[in-house]
Length: 90
Image (cartoon, rainbow, N blue to C red):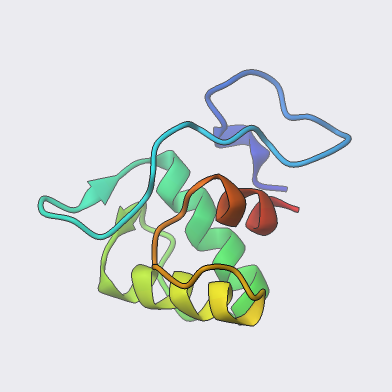
């Protein structure tokens, strides 16, 4: 489980960890954090190990988010908002 890095309290055993409240997206400077690392790990679990779980939201992470969103029939924008987060965290 990847719930140890969630900063909003203990992991919920009945569902995904709560959304951290910030949109994760490609920008300059690159976004960094434990929430990005968690998303990268979930993407690797869902799509296969394609990206480094380094906590940096770079172009490869955005491409993986887009591929995941397309696969799950979510809005394909490369941004991890609440719906993408909750889908990945399940």
